Image 1 (spheres, rainbow, N blue to C red):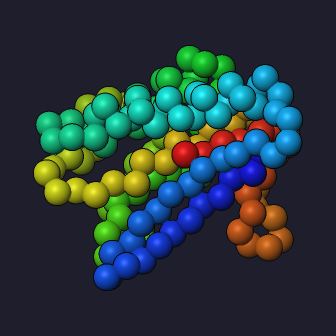
Image 2: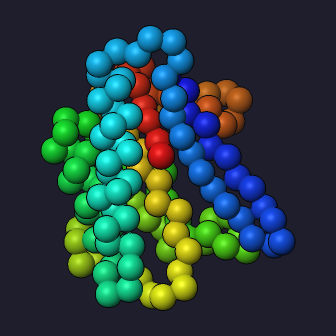
Length: 142
């Protein structure tokens, strides 16, 4: 599996998208991980509208991931995005419903579920960019 996170800037605004792909023949666990990550995104999106809070998105993602036997990365999170790549509010992939900033009309959010098949422990390689799981289990992002 490989995850690629791309950022584009046009006319002073940023865009951010991450996708994970299976290279070669994937295992059933890897295929399930991708499906759960994708659906976790859609579970969070249900709450990405005025009247809800950031914690509602976070809670929906984390609960869906855990219910399916996986863990979320806690060191990284989604975020607001616009003229700057990372803007407020931060959007963790876990949390309590009903908490955090209220979602308002016009907010632009990068909702980024980051899901791990094994323990939720990660570390950064010496290249200063690559993140791997401590137990070398698969990780996925969307």
